[in-house]
Image (cartoon, rainbow, N blue to C red; front, side, top):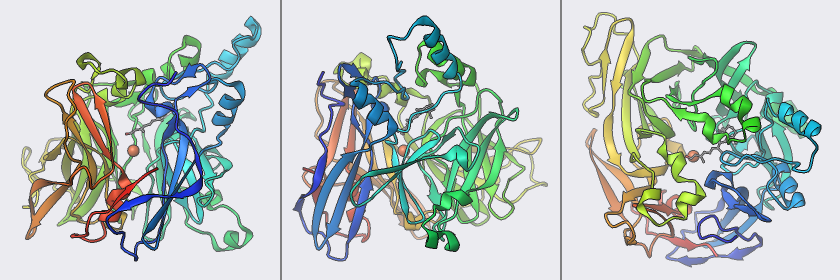
Length: 502
Ligand SMILES: CC1=C(/C=C/C(C)=C/C=C/C(C)=C/C=O)C(C)(C)CCC1
Ligand SMILES: [Fe+2]
């Protein structure tokens, strides 16, 4: 069952020296940890969706101009159960699995019932989080897995619910200046309420550090935002963070809790419990970190689907934030392996292009401003915030760049005005079956004086950057290995270095 896309990857347990073209500056030392799906078939069974694959951890150790690579599958409970059964027995985002096909009717019924409140997967395939001195592999459920960054061994399984009431949490946490982790999760129908919970995990607790205890024990709720709906909270993949504010988009891409509660018995996937409500608005919640409360103004914008916040910053009494936005939720559709492995146009279902949009919200109430007036007076952006009645403000974004995803920034610039976004370019191929030889692009808004005037994509030739080309019908997705970006970032005019993974 070996298919082109989603082929099972081999572990590289012993570090191997990577082939380096160009020169890695000697001051660049350290380790880059990455995560992602590595195995999509177990025995005769196969996951449906790319986001379902079993987590494969990667490390790149950079030392004296050399790079050493190794990889290892996360030995999650999910991985172990699947391997032992030689088939998929744990449900993932796009695949519903049934552990015991041979059970009699009574134990089957019991199994269904016990799944009404589902125990989610600990296949932490999305990201790596640093928490005090510890590293965790993360996904979007209530589980994270501690790992040893040196050996990539899998350590403790942590259930966020032991420390904070969340059923799902993002895999894109933020870090404040002191290294504390700030993350968000959703607490579903807990004590009759559904809310979005922002929580803080301290970097270190001095007395615990000596005893080798985890700072997770000291997790505290920073702020919670009631969901507009008890049974259909928004789905979100990330949020925005500056020194003083947190930006949360309550978007009309929602989880249907009733559908989720019956998914197992109906034999449908978690993915089918997510829906885009194009008739709804996107609500913009701004939490003031000093008061730990959301601002009372009701900021909103048109319906959209955002996976990635890029960065946010404050400027002259306004909060600006950049996100990659879609007009619908077709991105998730696209990543079904059946679609990814098709060549033909009909299977490319990305009906909206990811667009980098800049929003601006005024931080101070403009009580006396006229209804219909634009509350953004900045010359650096064309984003507008139009005052409406009943303390409502409609936000109209500035379009910064069309066709990019997987954005990264140098995190030292998080929350501040910034110049570079490193991303993968998403392109529509005019000829469906023809491969395009286009270089990976990253977006560099050229700042002239105080004013970012235009976004000029600067190209790097394919030989300079290691890239993975995902050909998706009419869409071509060039995924540049982020490692290259990290190497390139630190100096504006740094020479390109490419590292080829073995
Ligand atoms: C298993 C599971 C989930 C997993 C979602 C995943 C795995 C999302 C991955 C998203 C990515 C990688 C987006 C990139 O832009 C939900 C829906 C949270 C809740 C139900 C159980
Ligand atoms: Fe992401």
